[in-house]
Amino acid sequence: MMKFLPIFLNTRNQACLVIGGGATANRKVELLLRAQAKVIVVAPKLTESLNQLLHDGHITHRANLFVPTDLQNCRLVIAATNDKAVNKEISVMAQAQGILVNVVDQPELCTFIMPSIIDRSPIEIAVSTGGASPVLARLLRARLESLIPANYGKLAEFVASFRDQVKQRLPFNERRLFWENVLQGSIAEMLLAGHTEAATEALKNLINETSASDQKFGEVYLVGGGPGDPDLLTFRALRLMQQADVVLYDRLVSPGILNLVRREAERIYVGKAPTNHPVPQDEINQLLIRLAKEGKRVLRLKGGDPFLFGRGGEEIETLMEEGITFQIVPGITAATGSSAYAGIPLTHRDYAQSCLFVTGHLKDDSINLNWEALAQPHQTVVIYMGLRGLPVICRELIQQGMPVSTPAALIQKATTAKQRVLVGTLETLPGTVESADINLSSIIIIGDVVKLHEKLAWFTP
Ligand SMILES: C[S@@+](CC[C@H](N)C(=O)[O-])C[C@H]1O[C@@H](n2cnc3c(N)ncnc32)[C@H](O)[C@@H]1O
Image (cartoon, rainbow, N blue to C red; front, side, top):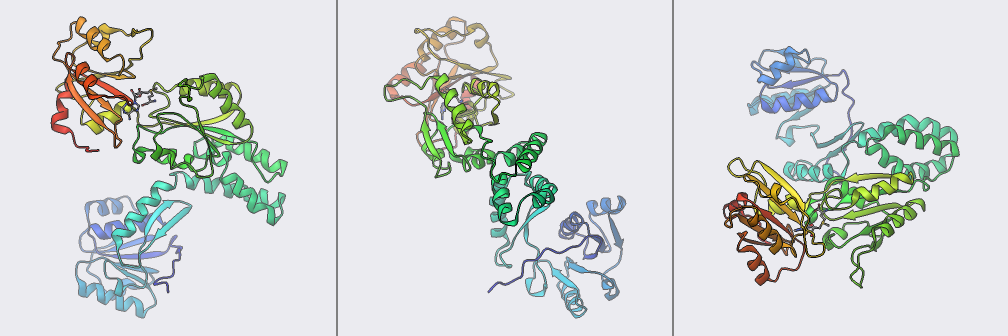
């Protein structure tokens, strides 16, 4: 049996009474105001923010202790005084007069309870544990908050503005399918990504074609999967991962992250082939175009951030040339992931006021970098793809005048169970790394900030 009947109450312009002027009453008042109620607060004294609401004309105040006549003409009452006897008295009187009553933290005195709310107005989701555990309700709410995009309300308003048109155009049995396709397809995505005009145009076209499918609008999601720990994905990344028809992923995407992609999605690996040659970039670009033109929602999932040493820009350029819609979702890049999980801040008032991200990729056994710029004091240098070139990097920096004792660290597979942090100096790190048998993707951090690792390291894989 349900303990309560969930209903949504229309409180617009309705007189709602809050008895009590403290912090709890304050929260209830704010909620009632969000629901457009006419709020009357009964309390000898008010909190500062209630006083502000009074001053701004949002509430009415009766500066007295509760008296029975306060209940006259009100729709609902919330008792939030710190006197249990008074709260009980209010509850008994309100119930006798058929007024809805809530007594804070005393469910036995309530005729209604206040749920935890996920507000995506006009969409509202209420979570209640029937008073069993408000904390559990709040935790559930936090989960739901993370699953439901912040601008879902906008989506609901968008749909509402087209409902009549669709009603006129399509018979009842086709309408459901039509809206399902729109809400799970590229039109909804365009809107959520802020392309209101494009979404409106696309929906108008779809309505005029009276086709119950928007399949022809394939699109590409270029998503940064972060450095490895699935918990570091963004909400948007996760949502798009769960609605993709096909995913193109490469070597850096961890199995834990790939597991979160919609189970039915086709998986295409475009990292290193068995011959150990990466799939050429142009082939990936062409594949993205072909799949999107087939009407698919194509997830291009990359490690870290797609725009940092990720060739995301090149992929998007070709999509633009072909007129294919896309979204880009940033991810936590290896530099910030490693920095956080190794306890090495990239800047620090005492040690470094700037930070450089560079690639240490070897070409013909040499690295083409501006060594002079890298060897400046009070800065941190983060080197991606620098594992093989580490001895060259350290040698060049020393030649540019950096002290041999400059702290340096190598972080392998940051944020994952395989994370390893090796710390040394420009002089010692290459040898330490060689004897440690490091062979997975690793990043190098050079600069005085590395000293902080000893103190700030917190993550134990
Ligand atoms: C082609 S780059 C891609 C970078 C990626 N787009 C990003 O934003 O992190 C690959 C390099 O990123 C670094 N990298 C990526 N993930 C890493 C991790 N979990 N730990 C350490 N380094 C990582 C390594 O230096 C690796 O060689």
